[in-house]
Image (cartoon, one colour):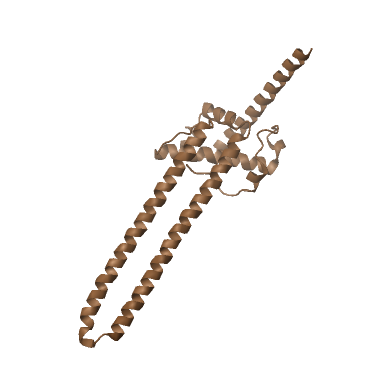
Length: 220
């Protein structure tokens, strides 16, 4: 009797899983219609079905939320680093201007042209240094963001999210961004309407912390 009851429960669980998968797939198919037609063609039934399977237990929502938080922290850190560098350059320019003004005020008139020529050379050298430091900072930011993108792609690939793998191909990156946009919109739909919105059971429902989070999910 217990064996029979266990078998019935397994059948019921399977039916519930199948129903949740169907509801998620239907929601994704509806959301895909909002994307540009060029990407709609690339998001096949199989891809959307695989994505729906990956979303069933809610783990992917948790992963995307974690990646989003890491990305925001990284972007904030890089922004602050660049801001500090800009402030250092501003202070450097101000100090140099003051130094030059004081030197000119103390300079004898007949030596002024020589002093101004030397100051112009010093100014050019400082401006060159500032440009090089800005370029180095921008390269650092790009490399760091590229590493984060690769980490995000790898994490989502390991989580079994359809369409994700490490790539730098612009078209594939855009496709991955659209997939994440689908996940974000599906997550928001669940947050707004609750479990009843799609007729789903509890496991897939995004956590409350995600409902409070605004902004886009991690762009790959």
